[in-house]
Length: 220
Image 1 (cartoon, rainbow, N blue to C red):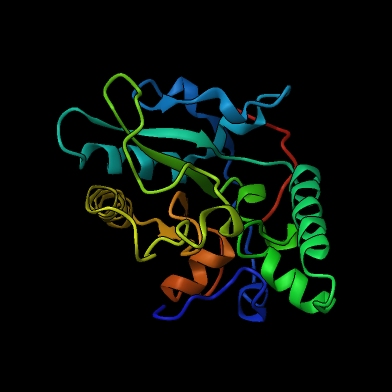
Image 2: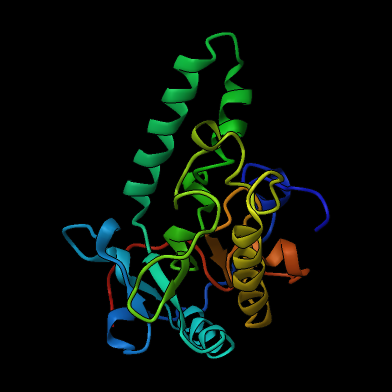
């Protein structure tokens, strides 16, 4: 895709899901991935991903230069939590822009939080991650992770102008290894990558998405 297609775009929702039934696995059992606990929830849902996504993350990590690691922050997000995040951010936008139509609010909200019905995180298909050194110290990627468009002045967009040369190089490195491993980026969030969801299918031309939103159980 050469244009920025938002999660709210009807073309994303139009992609059919042919659920593979592939299980969610705990990335903390993988061993070689660094896991940051900042998004840890009481049920530990955050640390889970579909098996196929984990396999691709491990491949991406192998492609990194020595001394650098992928730092996993959040994977699976239950549909109820996704809905709460979406509604909270949409509410903030309504307060900031009282003259906006509801359609514009929902479209703008999808720059930062996916609509619950198609959310890649709720399919176990998406991961929020960054780069770190071997000890888990984060590299400079231009903004903090999860900085929204208002806070960052748009610098959270993957190809935003105005970030430093080092941050740009780090974004390009992160993107190169994850793309090589088969994941796709949501271009309004440099840290958000996915495989197997509807957005991935649209970006890659796949006819169907093998992963759709699911409840957490059963887990492996």
